Length: 93
Figure 1: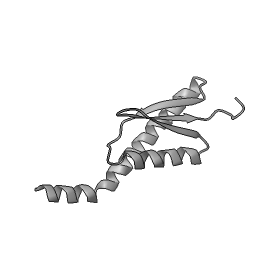
Figure 2: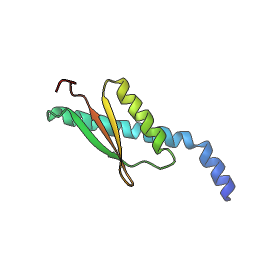
Figure 3: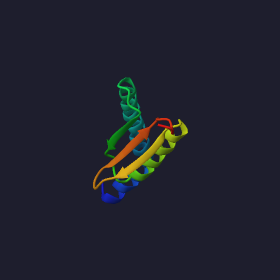
Figure 4: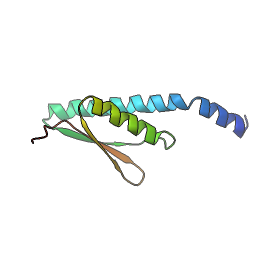
C-alpha cells in the first residue's frame, strides 16, 4: 500500500475513529461521575488523551452531550492533554 492509498482509507474511516473516541470518553466520564456521587462529590475532573485529528470534534460533542444532560462543563487545555470538568452542583452552592 502506498501513502496515497493509506490516506484515502484513513479519511474514509475517520468517522469510526471519531465515534469510538467519543463513546470511550463519555463512558469514562460517566464512570467517574458514578464514583464521585457515591463519595459525595459534586464534580469530576478527567484528563482525556485523544488523537489530535479528532480531539476538538470529540471534545465539542462530549461538552454538548453532558450539557444536554444538565451538567456544567468546562474544558481546560494543558500542553499535551485536555481536562474536562463536569459539575452538577446547584448554582446556589
